[in-house]
Figure 1 (cartoon, rainbow, N blue to C red):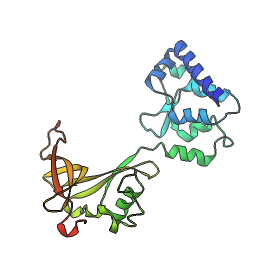
Figure 2: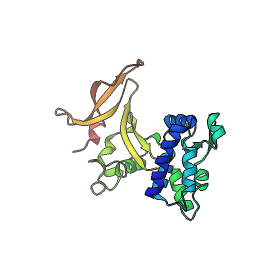
Figure 3: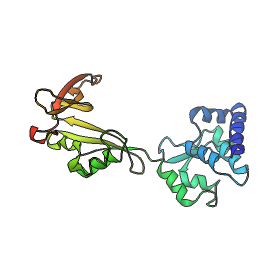
Amino acid sequence: MEEQLNTVETLAHILYGTREWHRREQMRNPIHHAIYSLIFEKAAPDLGPVIELCAQWPHMSKSDQTKVAYTQDEGKGIADRQTVTTFGRYVRKFYSSAIISDHELRDIAARLKPDEMRFTTDPDEIYRAVIHGPTSCMSKESEWASYDEHPYRVYCPELGWRLAVRYGPTGDVLGRCWVYGDGDCTGFVRSYKKCPHTGIFGLRLYQRSKPRTPHQSYRSKCTIPTARPSHRLA
């Protein structure tokens, strides 16, 4: 596939110097990263499809990042008119199912969906987010077989706690952060802190108080309890 990649890079360089509209498109948008990966990974029957693909300069649509925008021909390039279509439909113009199977194409298209951010107070979802999300000292399933055994259970929703979770396009957990709000104080977790006087587990927070000005930052800190003393961990 090295020949295919070299062809794209050489042709892109030529078009940049000879076609004003193509130079505009290259400067405006990089070629679609998923399509570039296909050129690198999948062998086309000949260089014809690869050359046509480069000439159309497919890129991620600004109106919908799951779709592809491309320039159909010279006339539309000069007129600055791009066509938007689905990722799968565009790729099928150049690669048959013998080269890229339908399920491979669906998997690639699914990964183009934007990440999603949600809050949750559901114990099962919190447990899934910490155990199957980014690795940390809290994500050891061997030590905590369920949410009822996990240290995170001290973050009581009734006291203002909820977990912010970032989900990838296929539902995988990409990030998490405990968020606190009681009406007067809001913030997000930065680090654990145990009070030497009360024994209550607390958290070091970046905190803000109402009302918030447009440029107010989270620089002030406070320590607040995560649960009533009867629920604290030993």
